[in-house]
Length: 121
Image (cartoon, rainbow, N blue to C red; front, side, top):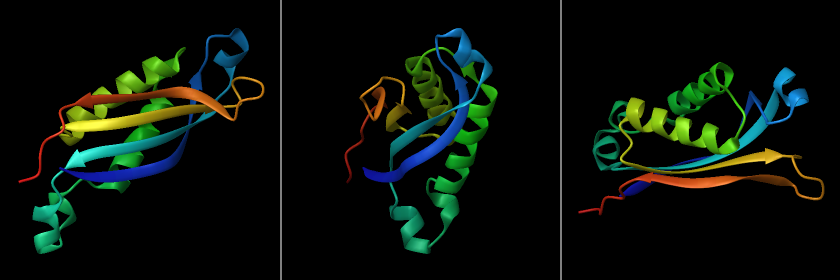
């Protein structure tokens, strides 16, 4: 299995459990590791045969704009499901950070893994 990376992607969304958070957008920081096989794309130099990180990043931005949740956990779970469904990702690791949420901490968040890691042949 090969890994496609998208690191430190920032998206704006409505997220939080407090009333004041429900009326503003906040920036989340995302790191993604997406499992795939890059060999077919590399053999013929064709982006159509691999995970297009520009398209995935744009989809994440649209997802963030369309969703309004209280928990970072909910955001992460629903985004992981969306990416696996829409981009045929067999496995992913997603870290979602919410900067400034807790005094004294640079960020809080979650890291989840979904799917099955496939062995490279």
